[in-house]
Image (cartoon, rainbow, N blue to C red; front, side):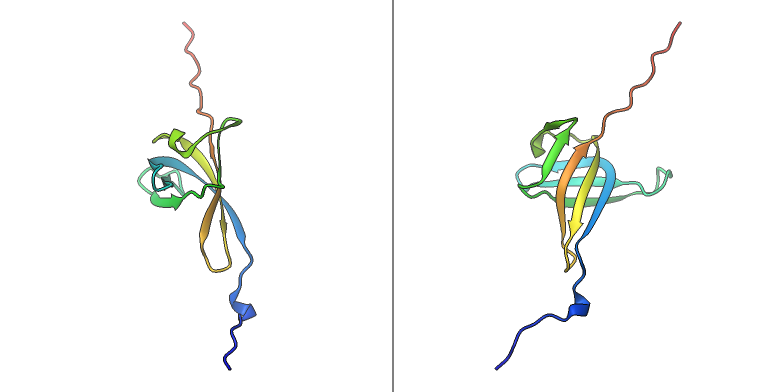
Amino acid sequence: MAMLGFCQGDIRPPQVTSNSGEIIAVDAEKSTVGLRQRPTADPNLFFDVVLAVPPAARILKGNVDVKLSELKVGDQVMVRCVTDSVGRLTVESITVQAKELTPAVRQ
């Protein structure tokens, strides 16, 4: 009789990460967002990822819950994700960062 089991060495605890970036695409029908991340200040160095956004994910603009469809290309966001023991990435929350205001020029 065959028995199924897990090798304890292969199981990793869930890891929480937060990544900031710019929204480059939103597909509300497929529940995905495209995120451009810049790991350095060099504008020519970036990588793009597509993230599946589950229905349970919380999406905030300021302190207001919004729908995925309300995210806009160009929004600067912070994405909180959990990577499970087998490496699957799950979005827990997306928070739109406040836009920096340009100070008014006094004359």
